[in-house]
Image 1 (cartoon, one colour):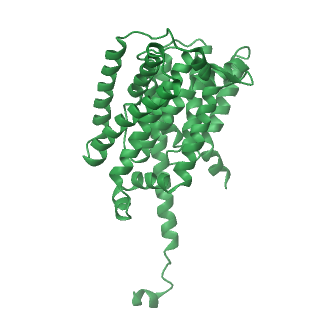
Image 2: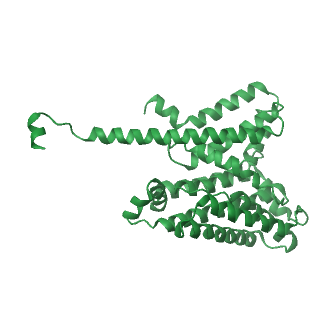
Image 3: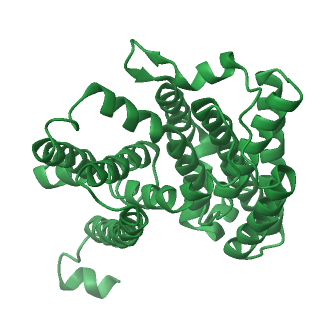
Length: 338
């Protein structure tokens, strides 16, 4: 592996390291501390789950704009069921994952089987879900009656340093990496995204693959909302909607590293923490609150451009490799024989 290939593959890790060194030099008193590192890990763990969910429809060539709304619904359902009905957390988790799967299946049928535009479908479904959130919550924050044992799920720190939500994110990343890269189901999703027509010809059920992608996206958003309540000890009706833009930025940025040109788990994971580290460092330097959405927007645009350039480079490399495999004519006799 050449040096340029190595730096390209691990560019996000290099960028994350550079950001850490820069903000450490700028704010050596508060940035390079265990407390700050733990906060960054905890604050971005839920965003990691949303970004991983968004990544799966992108793999099959579709867009899902609903995860922020679905996560908000899961937040309010989790807080409400725990507070008002004193349900067991595992039962609540099963319910919200089922609801998330139903929402994702609805979008999957509309996009995969009816071949409607995924942007329009996910935006419309997300708007309906947003209305349901306000209908259920009345715009109020739910914080009373949430069990302390449940809050401990999200606020406990392993070895008094590593937050449990970060551990959950690592476990989910590992499972998704294994399924997407080591199992036929994951390879089928990549095949659908690369060329739906070719995937159909080799026997892959493209509509079903799209359906599965949207179901995974919504279930990941629901899981993110569940963990968000355990982190905060309360349910806010709009707290998860802000995840959408940075999650897309992370998914696109992740496609530039580890497996350049492909949406991938570990690239998305590192990208989430690169963006999170950047926003945290900027705030510590005294940036105003409006800087965060601007920063996320700039990162998203850069990530989309970089991901597209990565795809172009990969396609050119494949064409060049194919040309090298075609033997050149050895002389006039061979030309005449052909």
